[in-house]
Length: 116
Image 1: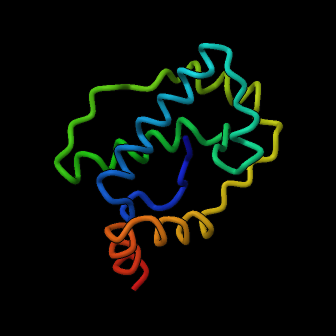
Image 2: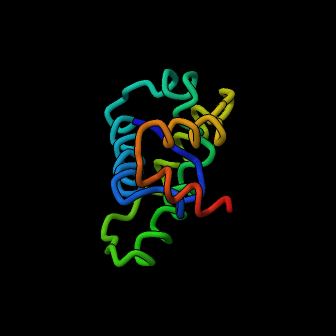
Image 3: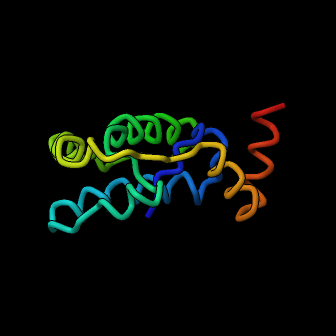
């Protein structure tokens, strides 16, 4: 699971929808009392940005013709921020852009177009 924290327009369909699902997975993990600190320490999650990131993702989805029918539990996002927000999150947009370019040809094309 990871939060890419890059401009949503650069994400291919798979990575856009995947990150959306993973925001819900973080919430579900928290509800099951699974510790999220490892994700934060590895730079895969910014606990203070979850609600905003979900909003960014669902704003992009209808622009591509995708329906969104799974609101995130804002109260749980607030609890995650409260419980883990003091941990330093090092989600690195630049590193994630480089990782997407290595992993995905479609994201690479979208990134090149975005940054032209």
